[in-house]
Length: 193
Image (cartoon, rainbow, N blue to C red; front, side, top):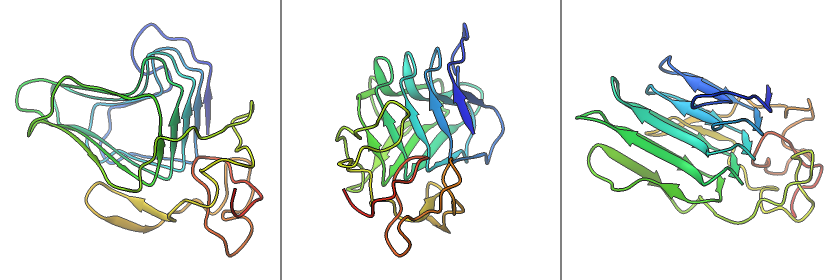
């Protein structure tokens, strides 16, 4: 899916999730007003997405009436307004962001962590410039090339192989065959930078 250049007067110019257990896969979410993805529920998985050039934020976990999370893998989140991530939580509701095997640039905007506000990453997260071309495909020297895990993450464990056998342009993933796939929604023809 391509969700680009949407104007809005509220949060989530790209996608706002109110349904639990939602999968957002192989999407370009770019140039949207008031953010890329906002989650108000749990079980939200984002895999092989490119979330770039959105105003205000890239991703927002916002819980008031329910717990909310974003489980992100094999994705690129870059150049999004003032921050890559925002988190907001009230009462005893839990806001959680879990990131695996992704590039995130632009910082995280939350004032504190607690049992109710969790930002969970591991060593597969990097903050290097993804080096995207004007059409959001990968530049030949991008660190996103050949670094996808091929595994979708649900927040507690790998879910098994990603279902993204093709990229957003319907190019085979991985390319070339036998290599590791790339981060984001577009596959480079190169197996490594």
